[in-house]
Amino acid sequence: MRILISGAGPAGLALANCLLDVGLTPVVVERAPALRTAGYAVGLHLGGWEVAERLGLIDALKARAISIQRADYRDAQGRRLFSYNYRHLAAACGDRMLVIMRDALQEVLVERLAGRVPIRYGTTITALADEGEAVEVELSDGARERFDLVVAADGYRSGVRELHFGPHSAFLKPLGYRSAAWRMPSSREMDCDYAAFMDIDLQAGLYRVGDGTISTLFCWRDDDTSRVPQEMRLTQIAGRFSDWPTLIADTFRHGVDWTNGFFDTICQVNAPEWSRGRVVLVGDAAHCMTFLSGQGTSTAVVGAHVLASELASRPLEDALAAYEARLRPKVSRLMKQSEQIGGHYVPRSRLGLAVQSWIIPALMRPPLVRLMARKMESSSLSIA
Image (cartoon, rainbow, N blue to C red):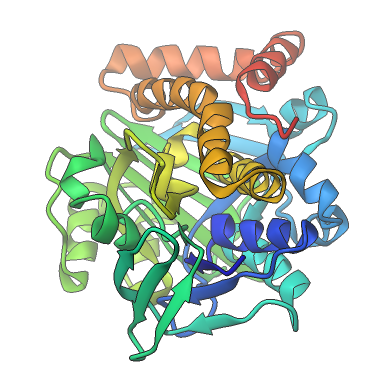
């Protein structure tokens, strides 16, 4: 079976690895000219951890993981709100979870594919036609090829989904926030692993990556969903955060290289069908939950494993139906939870800010953290 994967992010690369392990060798195309370095830290746990174990990647991932233990939260004037230790949650999950930069996760996945799966960088699918027995694909380099299956793993603004399923407006559900993230040299000492600052409708954070750099993560309430030109992005951020404590305000005063940064509206993806004919959606292209859920990467990795295992054991049409039937019920529940999390992550009022200052540290300490870990486990996807 000839399989084309569009997108060399965590979902596409995990799928390529899982397909190899069931005897299928895909081809991967990626819009970027090289492996993307943009993005923020992602969590891998529970089902995602299980897939990484099966691929033999846990040691490599641990070696590149970020050590986040103490997290301090302050208000916009720098006054302490609360602290917690992330290790409490990891321990409650049996230490089967880690935090890693998105590009580091991709590097580990690419290394396992080296010499076995071709990755064509700087290449996109510009047209496709499902002819029933195969998909005729036209690529941006002018090539025309036929594949048995095309996989859209190209993110929540999926180009393949737009070509084959319909316009973005039919699938994207804005949650009323924007976010931005980029990495920069560590020029200021931090006395914790994660420093966050919160106010009504606003949150900003910094965390050490472990390679001499720090990463930012800004999030703010904004109902405008229009695209923002690169030259206007820092103006938007500065208009909201420039009078915050120096640790935050200094991060955007020296410019940002947006080719290695992230700035976008926070949207979920609601796709009524994950496959149509010989084209299938995985990861954020099918069910983006946003970074607010903390479940997106693990869910994408589990979805990749499930799709590969179904393709190896059933005829194509049955495999695609089984893939969706196994995942959609829990994915739907996780997406509903993700919608609710935004109001907690970026409080809407002084009361909400005060409640968060009490409830988060309480949930992150024994015995409540064990209850939270069990709830995470019950709602997360499994590869079984």
